[in-house]
Length: 467
Image (cartoon, rainbow, N blue to C red; front, side, top):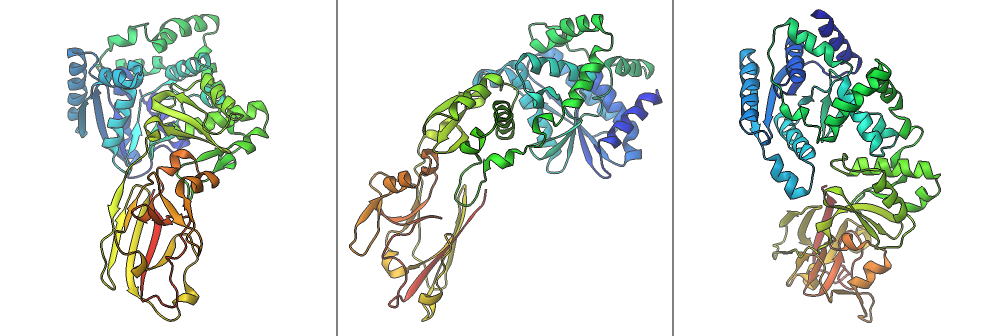
């Protein structure tokens, strides 16, 4: 009985899964795999010096059976004095709403519950074992995954800022159930695991047994192959080399198309796979077909786009390829009136992308010599702009003065000439009065609203990105 405990303890140490004073949140379904992991973690808790909690999720799929399993898991946690939480969700409803498979909807809701229970610093533990790994690799293989996908599940990975650990990933299911039998520990059986209408179940129930007829070590060899493939897709290459970094003026991470087109076809596909994995919240329904669609976009013109799973789109704008939500295409009409400020008064506001601070102060003789030249701090003559001042997004007819002759330039033309992608234009804030724009925040100021030797009051505006 101690063999499996020692084996898992070594696997935890080899992969630096659990550190002293960690809080480990275990997904406890009541099934044999998670019950085994629960018992082993409980046995190791004092030795490895960590806190243990459990979360059980009733996915709303199996009715009374699901509720019974949740009660079993809760009772097991209470028996061992482990804090527990039971969460009930509606996976069928999410599947219908987002056009997902029932499996994927359940997975999304399950991990959301685990993340919520883990809080800011908790470690999430799940009971995937070697057979699950082999099943995952085969499933991804037949769906057209690249080297990254074929490396399977990792012993330790990151999920929305949490460490996700799989302490049983090197353990065969036969070892798990032998351990439970030796400890005379009951567990629940999920009848949906026998339903071969699910692709993964067909692989586990039909395909893997056939492969084991050919070679009894088939599962072991598939897992070993996955381990060897870890990092192959990224070998010598970093996706950051092809990204236009998010900065003060940009709204998202985008791929630089000319840099990608210089690479060989296989390298291009690896880059696109890595980018999708980086930017998509859930990668499981992304296949080689989606990568091919993105590859076609690389040579398409500005404005071309393709639809991806989860309501996302890939879009080309000038020399950039980026992802956005479909609803982002709708312009965002937003406005906030700027109050009249007393001398010395500070006013600030936080938006989705900016922290904006405004201060009114008396002008000094030296101000015209030392005024800031940075894009993110501007001085304006308060008397020239104070009436009807607002922060807002663009509108039809917006323009700004460009010279002493009071010639004007339309905001729309400025955005086009500056090659600002259409979706970013709807996010950029303007300092304006009516349709007269004084400052395109972080970019261009209008002529005639700055300070001069006659300025008496200065409006100092500083902006900082907060996303």
